[in-house]
Length: 271
Ligand SMILES: [Zn+2]
Image (cartoon, rainbow, N blue to C red; front, top):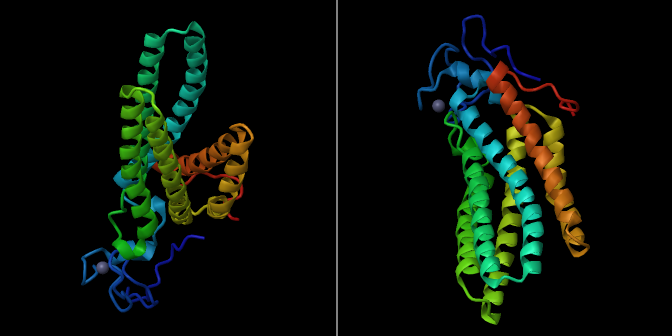
């Protein structure tokens, strides 16, 4: 699975066709102890391959924090939604307009804070690995996840401001509906990019289970979520739990690499 043996001959010269992990320069014929003449990266680093367990400790910690923020913000947002439904019901039953407006504003800002927390998590978990240049990372997926995270912050901010400070009107219902639709489209785009990005990270564990699941989830989770949304909210919740479990498995590997230097031993990793 892992290439431990350096493809170097007894004279310590790289005799296999390999390229520099950072810049892609052909390192065949260089000393295994030497440095890339183009970018200065140690040749030994390129011979080790791109496994996460060989990546810089700070980089692993950053993407681990990103995964934790995304995962925890999803849990808190589910709790908030359930709590909000209960409180909203009792506020509505009491019939207090001032209290219910105050509650709506508070709920909108709590939802905003949690979604920004999760979106900052996406920015952290897509931090570029400093040992590569663009050609060795899934740049398109990474950039889409980040761009959508910024766009979502704007959409969420507007949603919170409108629902907290505007008076209810037909026009406002249209604006809020439009923003919500935009947020769903943005999430769908980010989701597909996130699955492609996760496949790349999982190959570096390596965990074939995550690679396979993330590939399948690109079409399976929308299929679970969309018809399910028409029948109650069960479909999106099931899809969210499946998404959560997949990212949590990636987090287990990152935690294990930080603690022990090697990925977690989980079922199905070899594929
Ligand atoms: Zn190089």
